[in-house]
Length: 423
Image (cartoon, rainbow, N blue to C red):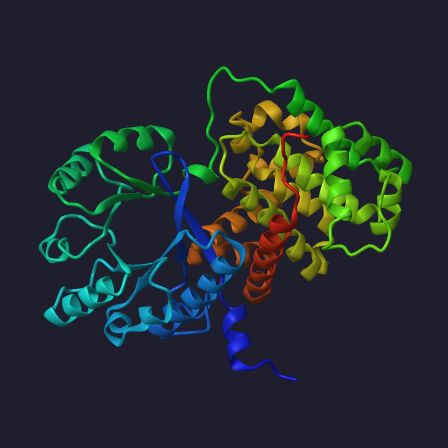
């Protein structure tokens, strides 16, 4: 049976979310990133309006199903879609309508944006540089987004100086490092968006704590080829917090076991070594994360692992072990979580040297797979296309893997028991 058109359409999109943070470091909302569909090798849709609306709708549904529904969702809309009233299909309490920088502020457009604003939607001016057309929309705007990439400090200063007295929130896009973040705060910036939280943040003088080393040793022990019920039981029992969370999870109504599980060995026999091993990896990663780190990092790490696992399962020609690819992707953000350079902790990472090289050499086969995952996160369609060709993986397979991994990651995260004071 041939899949229907809607199914084909959905499978050819990469739904990506990029978090937006406030000055306290909390997640304020997300921008949904999408493909414009103009390159047939990248997407099968050539109508930009349809592509924008379809991906935004799919992405919105995912974001609301698996995330805090109070967070704002920023979506780029074309002029045509705004005039047609397309944003009305989304709830005004969380939707932010981004007005693209090349849209001319006609009276018809201004009236429509004002109507949407009065209905409760937030209006954002995208890529603001202070031009005449953009200034005409400032009285309507709730948010002004400034793309700071490739701009000099003088240019940035002039843009923010021109926004003094404007009540709209100032959002800086493409914040890639801590220094830039600290520079923007005194200028009156309220919100931040960029790859800063997805890239290594190396702080000098920090060492790996003994508790972090012990957690990494658990991951190493889990990769032992002779792993069996007895050895995995000892691993779990060595950490009271992990033991507590495993038993609490399996005795919950979600699993629906008819008998109460009172021992770890009983739990292992009920759900199997493979599933326990999977669960343990996620718990250990959660424990390793600093308390002040956002859960977005954790979700991203899980998604990287699952996406690479999906690709390994789809592409049997490469003979990559899906289980190993999951671990490779999941640990790729370990340096960000610990705020320690990867080369200082690589000896503790439970991977073969060939996989470890993927963290340092972008031209290696594993390095290219990692770059592909990052390109998908950033909705970088040009890089996705290039890396798919270099690796030899079909873009349809990558799209399928991306959609499946996103759904799995969010469902898994929501069902994973959190740490508490009893651990």
